[in-house]
Image 1 (cartoon, rainbow, N blue to C red):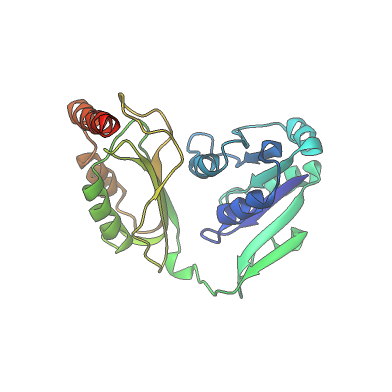
Image 2 (cartoon, rainbow, N blue to C red):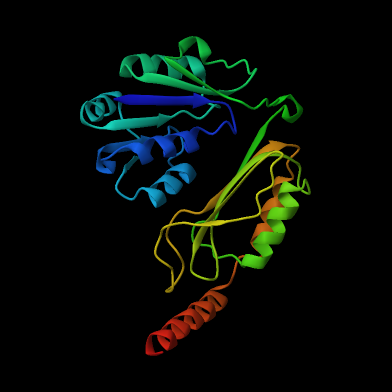
Length: 254
């Protein structure tokens, strides 16, 4: 079965997919694909952390997806910025089930094509953020100073760099962890979740990391400059990694 998940920014498409996957008995029989995100696979990385056995597809032909849908459950998360007419033609060829998520009172542009509509009991108005801007910062290979990240996160979500609708970020920090944070206006969440990946204690990390910011009047250059200020040097990374390895050895020798 191919399930196409559609909805506006911040409505919770990835969260919904995550809940659905959690209920399936065989995670090996799950495929996830989000078109046009192969160079910035933020949501795919989050899902892979929680469900290591699922298959992540970055690109796939209609024929390949149809074949996959015969034996697996394919979740096709559609970014809202894609042109709907082209998306609709593809979904018709795939014979997918179209699930539309929306807030209460929202006039969704995808509603006419929906096979199922899920309405969340929360009113949300995107008009104050019009025109929406999207800023993505790729951080793969970078290691961040955690206290500086916390300060930046508070400033960012507090409006220091523009009017923020939603933020998602995956970051490698000096403890060797890969962590995830998210924010949806107006609910501030100061906590970061440690993703289920091995600690990076040798060299620079190779897993995807990056930040996606959606909002209005974004000061993109200042955001990029600020992030770069607390990216650690090779020497600092090596120092912290050695400290962690030494501490772990002492604990083992106990």
